[in-house]
Image (tube, rainbow, N blue to C red; front, side, top):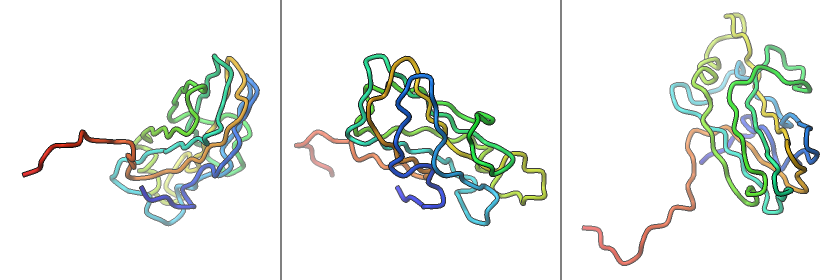
Length: 159
């Protein structure tokens, strides 16, 4: 998995803590900027949570991928492109991956004057049900997902 600073939504960003609150990612990705973000390839968002992430027993963290037509910040909710709902009590040290809808990647290859409606994307972290007591998240757009947790049974031979 290769990461790119220009495709990073959050870098050890502190999660919102109070139930009923939300916060946008620190960074906004501009899909019109001249660069290759994986045209024709599936793209993923990788969320990596710090080991100290902790939450009350029923806490839920909802992460949404949102888009907007202008880069004015994502202080309020924008057009939702994808949503993942997570049990906040089980996030410590975990890495969660979800696929970005194909239309998002296709928009990067249109120029700014061609009718791209919402070329700016960001994440929104929303806490519901109960408080999150601690934790940080790093979030990136990637083409390949690293699976460092796959283990195979020992004692077999390969011919």
